[in-house]
Structure formats: structure tokens, C-alpha cells
Image 1 (spheres, rainbow, N blue to C red):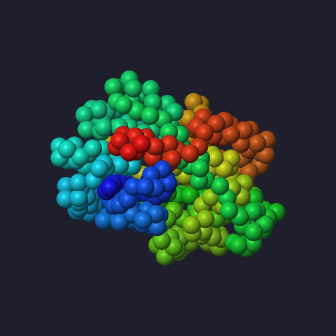
Image 2 (image 1 turned 120 degrees about the vertical axis):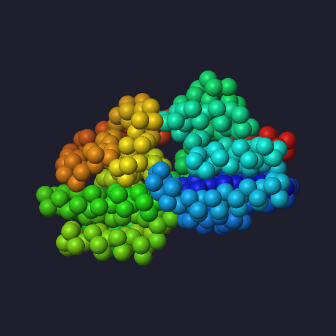
Length: 383
């Protein structure tokens, strides 16, 4: 049985890899072949990736316009592969700007579709719910409040819990981690996570590094930048080299494939809005959520956003428990002040940690990939 999985960025393809393994575990007697769009994690899980996420991980109207040819090639590649191979189903993972276009062609061709990890329609451009209702056969969501949203719009939906509950944990203890990166355990460690896309990092990393410099001038602190799997060390080093002309001798160490250890052993994290904020929450690491995009993107997108808060952590909590510095509020000076406030106030960090534990509880009981696999196999009539 062929199954097609379509993911378009780093966190989505990791969830895709976990789902592949769970489907195999739930159906050992079925010979399964997976293909689609993904990255190293999905390939390691045995999927054939016709499109690599590193080529199509694009966000923002301007960037999408500039990368349109890449996206068009990816669309045609995946559409044609689905039409030729006729998979039992196509499993779409987040990536709404692409997947909500692809799903139309798939449905018209009579191919069944399952959406695992909902696009954030409840947050912005809610009119797209009409596409989901018409073209998606089954929606599997990972955030508890999404169930009511889809049911209210007549979409068949199941809550499977959040997949990060099963995977996010450190693999090194504090001593081993600090030894690995030659860090001093008596000095507070701040992890800086500027995003998983090149376009994001270009906007977010400069104010982060400048804020790090301002904070270091007033408080003893050391820094680490854990890189997303979609960002190469060489490209990050080139960007930091350019920034060092302004940040002087500030030491900013890089960590590859080690985000969870970095977050788990940090006093504080500064995290670009997205999946990584939940990873920090699950590791109970106090954090500041940041985001900045191109100004033209912000002007185009902001009127379409229906929320006053941007962080998934705050949305799940139902109130503001972590600071947010978004777009114009993300200045080096404001970020440095927020960092210093938290670094100097252990009681506030402890209170935030307790709030993050409550967020973890709201995300379900774990085994999300296995629950999703069971739902998918039931949908396909294989259980």
C-alpha cells in the first residue's frame, strides 16, 4: 500500500517521520511504501522524498513570490506523483499555503486526503475553512481548542494529542552538555532560536544578537544558538560573521541537532514564534517569544490575523504567561530589558515554569503519532 506524506518545513517533516514509524508499528502485516515531501528524518524513516523541505521552506507573501518557481515545481512533482502512483491516501502536514492548493487537485482526482496537524485557520484567514470542508476527508488535530473550531464548521475531526509530548526530552545531563560546548555551569545560559527558515533568520537574528550584546554588558551571561535542521552551520556562520562587525567580541556558539538539550539546560530561551516555543514549554524552560518579518509582509498579513496574541504557549494557556515581542516591538533594547528582567528574577522564572507545566497538561496524554496512525488505518479500513 502506497501512502503519500507532504510536509514543507523542519518540524512538520519530523512529525511525518514519527507518523511513518507509528503506522508501520500499527500495521506490521501490511507492506507499506511512503513517498512525498520531507527531509532527513522522513528519509531515515524509509520515505522516498521527491521534494526536500530545505528547498521549499518559504514563508511570507514576498518570499513566496520570489520562490514561486520552486514551489510550482514542487507542486507539479507531487501532484503528478500522486496521480501516477494512486496512493491509498495523501497525508498533509501543516504547510497550508501549499497543501490547501494541492488538496484540490488530489480530491478532484478521487484521491482521499487526511490532514494531520491543522493549519492555523482559527488564527488568520478563516475563510480557508471552506477549502478544508470541501476537499479534506479527515482532520486530525494536535491542539485541544481546534476540535470545537472544526466541529462548528462541519468538518470531521479528531484530537490525537500533541506529538511533541512523545519526543521532546534531553539526551544529556547538565554536566555533559556544558562540557560538550565548553560552557561554564555557574553562569546563566541563554539559548537564542531565530527560526527554521533562512528568511526568518535574516530578520530575527540581528536584533537577537544586538540584544544579547546589550544584556551581556549589564549581566554575566553566556549564549548558544541551536540551529534548526533546515539551517546549515556554514550559512549561520556567514551570517554571524557579518553581524560580528556590530557585536564586537560577543561569543555566540552554535549547536547543531541539539535543540532539546540546549533548551533543557538553559536559564532562559529567546524563541522565534512557532513549534520551538512549545518545545521550550515542554522542557519547562522560561522563554521570550519573538518574531519579525519583512515590513511589507507584516502590512499585508496583520489585517488577516484574528488574534491579539501570537504565541502557541499563550494561546494554549488561555492567557499571557510568556512575553511576546512581535514585529515593531522586537527591538534590541526591548528584548535586552525582557532578558535582564527574567535573568535577575528567579521567582518570576519559577512562576513561569509552573505555568508551562499547566500548558503541558493541556496538550493531552502522549502517543499522538500512534493515535494518528490508528485513526488513519481505521479511515483506510485496515483495522
